[in-house]
Image 1 (cartoon, helix red, strand yellow):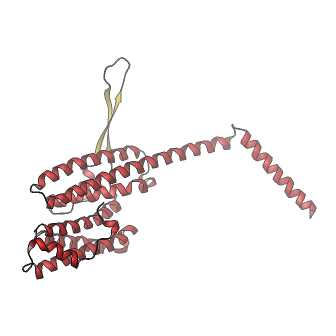
Image 2 (cartoon, helix red, strand yellow):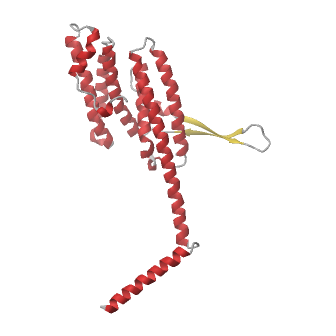
Image 3 (tube, one colour):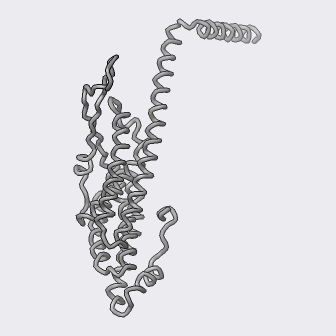
Length: 283
């Protein structure tokens, strides 16, 4: 028994000595390999954090655009609001161009979780603007067509007053189908709020248009069912809630609209519809 303990102790001491020898030898091939691994991981983590920061900026600006678009139901000239929203979305696209620059030569799915919240919010904002302007749903191809960027590298030779543009390169960013679906699912909540705001301003036609449009979106998501991304099934519940609120508003308009003054319709809806979930509320 003591002999076995002595052999085990000797083996442990030998292993410890070998580890110490390897750690003390910076020229070891193992140490060199792990230093390469460390640099690769640090580079990946740094890129991931930069993408998270850019995605956060995209989310903030997209939300501001959505809040701006809700003013179309209260202003006399909606085109001014839409033009301002276009300018804001151009700024958001410049941020997405920075994401495309970071992802150049990389596997997009290694970093997808870093920027997907911002892309979903952008899809929600651009589809909301497209619906207000054209009364239809924007396609994934139309969204991706606007996400083409020119990356121009500039050479700065010594003695030159200005840098000269060289090696112009086209960068593209492709919104994935899952991000597109999740952004459209979030759009339904904004359309529900637009419906209630329209009624409060005496517009009794928009709720029926929105009801039909939301029903078409709901039918499309129902076809996907459990075959789509996991997050889609989670957001389908919220989509049904939004559709139910809009349909309830249309029911109230149809049944009691003729006997209630227009300026009181919004109060009737607030008493008949359920409260908006706290996480859906406008900040």
